[in-house]
Length: 252
Ligand SMILES: NC(=O)c1ccc[n+]([C@@H]2O[C@H](COP(=O)([O-])OP(=O)(O)OC[C@H]3O[C@@H](n4cnc5c(N)ncnc54)[C@H](OP(=O)(O)O)[C@@H]3O)[C@@H](O)[C@H]2O)c1
Image (tube, rainbow, N blue to C red):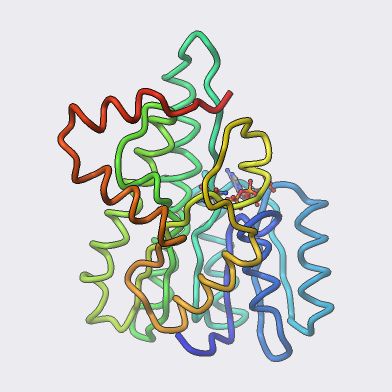
């Protein structure tokens, strides 16, 4: 969508979400920004207001289905939503004792349920009127990663869901875009103690995403060398990709 007037962004208190909010902020635009950290969310809102946008914030968890529905419906009442970006997400480290059950549940609660809890009310609001929905996946959703099984699986799930919704909702004039970044400099990656090829700033990532959403791209995947690498990985025979991925560093 070329010039969305009313935009809702989850996970806007830091990183890519905050950079997107600031990139979109301008006079005549209403931004609904969500996050859990009240202080950081207020700082992001202040930066957007300084650029002339009208900003409303909501502190809360994207895993709370009822609260998300109320927030999104109320926002739509206030200023009919043109663009909703389901961006909030987590990437948790593993401890040595492979705490897979709680880890996977927590990851899916934020990265998958959180996306559903954002996208489903947004679809109801946009039906009959049209609009745009963006889902934050990742290049790690292109192949299961032994270094982060829950994270890569959660991102594969929302990537596939977004791709499918795009076809389903086209007749409603609702455009669905899936965003698949590589390594982006944010709170999420700040604790990584391993090399992150082609690491990009959140501001640069936001510029690329804004451009992609303006042309209604089905998939916004970047940076290109990383995209080429994950595509190649997915094409390799499993025995080869096994060997390569076994060496991948793990988040602690
Ligand atoms: N950084 C990367 O390399 C990279 C690459 C590909 C995709 N992504 C995706 O991009 C998105 C943004 O990540 P980021 O890199 O900008 O990391 P970030 O700086 O840690 O930002 C994550 C945002 O999501 C919010 N959030 C997390 N869990 C939440 C929950 N349960 N309820 C509500 N808000 C929640 C955080 O809010 P609070 O801080 O207020 O809790 C924060 O605003 C994520 O979906 C991530 O998976 C990141």
